[in-house]
Amino acid sequence: MVILEHINLSLFLLLNHEVGHNTLLDGCVVFCANYLLFFLVIPILLLWGLPSRWRRRTVRPEEAVVLHENRNTLIWMVCSCALAVAISSLVATFVFEPRPFVSHHVTLLISHSADDSFPSDHATVAFAICGMFLCCLLSELKALRRLPDQEKRQGRSMLRLLRKPVLLSFVVVVACCLIGVARICAGVHYPGDILAGAFDGIVAAVLVSMLAQRLQVVTTWVLHFAQRLHLA
Image 1 (cartoon, one colour):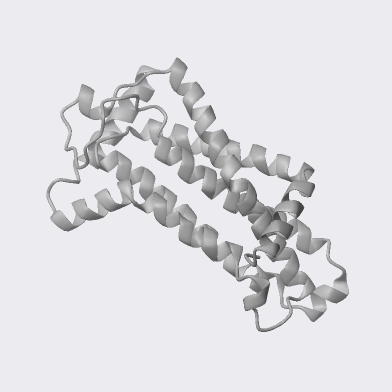
Image 2 (cartoon, one colour):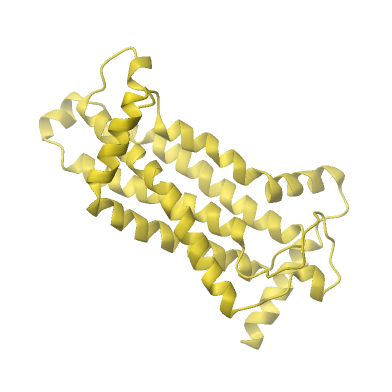
């Protein structure tokens, strides 16, 4: 345990030492630490796709499968974030770790209350979203493999169908990693806080994805309601 604490502190000091010398770098770190999480709404909306009334052509069967899995994932993403935050709050009741700037002399780029540091709420929510994107890819692969061979031949290749989800998932993964690293560099979290938050978020995403597969009636109702509002 002492060795892990030493590694945790050493990595924090190594990353935090890189800031405070360059205004541009510091600005990027502050943006990623404070605001990048909110920009994840962009890939979320892109994954949802255009409503049917805005489309110029009819959606092919294999495209409909991917679109359904995308929207199914986004419907449950809120539940994933809520569960991840609940797990994080439960962990925080048993483990209290002061912020790095409370216990050590650090370069602090953003103002923050001196509350519990473990695990990181930003990382928890970010990786709950990230985990849902990755689970979505797995669901789409399984769904496409169940399509009849004739529909696979008439449609575009599986790689092309999944190009958009794969690209968006990659963007989200990179953004979540930037958020985690920025929170460390900014002086408000240890690396262990970020890893714990990421673990909580991914576990929550997996659990919710398993639940979603058993509650298709819920997603079907929500999608029908969205179609009535011309949002799907």
